[in-house]
Structures are given as structure tokens and as C-alpha cells.
Length: 224
Image (cartoon, rainbow, N blue to C red; front, side, top):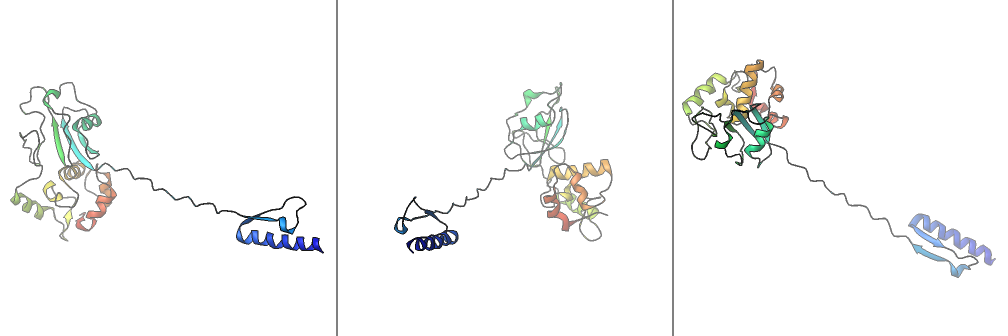
């Protein structure tokens, strides 16, 4: 009878172990009073750690002059002119690097001209109109000619009043969000080299323009 009682008690404890998550320890030859019940602590759930998202390059810089591969390069914020020159394949043999401050931090929409030996103006950033600045090699790259902007707005707008990507000039393109001097010049240059854009999404073929920028201007532009 006593043995049956022990078996019944063990059966109850096993059921409790299954339901409640406990461990049963029974010593050899133990009686009912010698049965030990040990609660098992639940395994802690690991807390997910978020991986920081690295920044994406978003500074468009146009470099020209005595460089191997002139063009538009998308840089990280805080990049210096030396890094842009390196991406452009470096300077040509006739470049006058002594006239340039390669440590300058470049800005979005910059246009830097790498001078050649003997050029009268050296190491300066060029504005949209082609004029050069003498104040430390930096200039405002946006045009201040309001009449030119108004004229280009009329010639570059589509029938729906939106900016026509196939006829708008640099000045009108710069009125679009996130489209500065460099990206506007890249759009016009791509259009002149490859013909009209077949769709708005064809802007993805332009250096420095991603889907995020396209989505921001999609409702403001057209292709005609």
C-alpha cells in the first residue's frame, strides 16, 4: 500500500513537471518524504540588438579639368577634394596640383575644376554660369538671374504645367526638390548624350539619382 502511494505521488509530480516546468529528483531507495522538487528557471529570451545603418553617400560633386575621368561623383558627407580626385582616376600629367587645396571639404552641388599648368585661373569652384570665384576657391553655384529662370520655366514646362524632363534646362531642373546644380547638369548631359527620357523612372540611368529622389519629384515632372 505504501509502495502504491509512492507511485501515485510520483505520477502527480511528473504531471506537475510537464505542466509547470519543474525537475524531480528521486534518490535511490527514497521514500515519499525524500522526493525533492526543483523548479527550473525559464531560459531568458535574448534581446535583439539593432544594427546601426551606415550612412549612404549623398553629396554630388562634379569634377572637371585635368583629371583622368571627369564627371559627377557621389561622396559621403565630410569627404575632401582629394577623395573626389582619387575616384576620378587621379590627375593628368599636366595638372597643376600645387594651386589646389586638396584638403577642402566638398559640398553637395560643387563643381571643382582641376587646373592645368599655365591656366590663368586655378583650383577654383565654378558656378552654373561658368564664372569662377576668388574667395578661397568657393562660390555660390546657384544662378541669381531671375529673368533667365522665368524664361526657362516657360520653355521647359510640359502641357500639364509640370517640369518636362526632355526640354527643361539646368535652371528649371534646379527648382525640383533634391535637384541641385550637379544633378541638373547630369540630367541635361545624359539627355544630350542619349536622347529623350522614355519615362520618369529612366532618371535612374543618371549618375547621382536614385529611386528616393525620383519618388520625391515624380508628381512634379513629366516626359513629353
